[in-house]
Image (cartoon, rainbow, N blue to C red):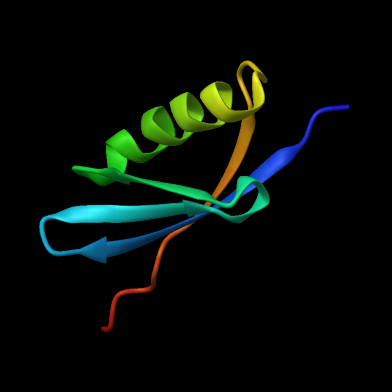
Length: 63
């Protein structure tokens, strides 16, 4: 059974703090494009699952 991992990313200075609550771990990314790469690597290392499906939540910007 494939699991979709919720990913919560928040800007923190020059980086993004990226949390994966399902595995109780976090990482950081330099930019938005790097978030899926960093999270996929983290999930693969922790769970052994390859090519996990991600659902990324980013904060809304104030208009």
